[in-house]
Length: 350
Image (cartoon, rainbow, N blue to C red; front, side, top):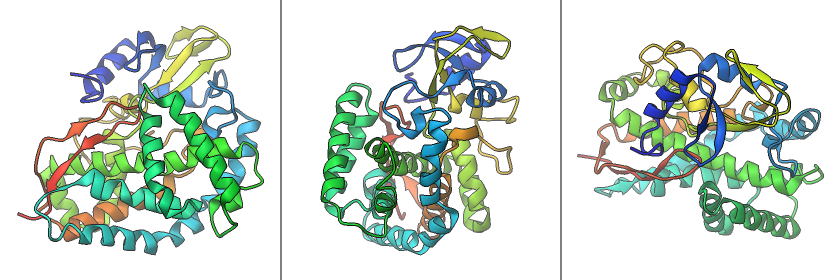
């Protein structure tokens, strides 16, 4: 079975090997770091640089450049601003689910998991509604290994055109307009601002439908849903393969020396299934230790608050309105850097 369909056997193998040089599922020769403690150490290690490509994108920079870039972006994604979005996210969620009321069968990705976060991030950023189809196409191409490089160029051109045409408004693009490396970081924020949340909703809902006891527990006690969102992120988060680093010096992780100039992959998915950290890691269980799906250290996801809130609202509303929601067909996993479903059909009602 391929990594994209089920990464669990790969996670087990990587952790058993410890930090080791492997051929990764994306075709790269890389040092794979996969145990929880090693992953946490690697994500904060000064000898493992995030600057694997030039260009000044936030997730590919190190201090002090990273610090300077992150401050205004973090302000734009402040807790107060995110909480102010809650009523709007609730309205979008209910509007999308209204269309399910008369349907015998729907595709979760096309009708809900994608439209919800793309609407939220586009409104937050100031991207016109008429551009959302183009943004979806560009994002899909950016996530696919074969089209990633070309798609980034097209996405950057789109963002440049948007900046030239856009009038100032009460949005993040306007707020960041004078910041350096704006085009590169808008590509990142628009993409990461919805793509990972699509997969949180899709992967998470699939896990709940395959665990009817947990599903019913959340229906009976919705106050548990915020905790469940974190457990769903741990169980099958979007960044299964993980994040890339480059060793700027010889680095010792888990008792293994990684030579200078080596490519390194830090597997968030493998760390989140480490049984030394999470007993029975393949099962859903509330109240676990914190996960690393949002990263760790200075590169901790700047949009984590928004993603959690969207997940809480999405799952809470889905389970309240469609408590008998059930799988209609075996879902199909896509082949992309962000782990997620290509097709996920359900029956909203019996």
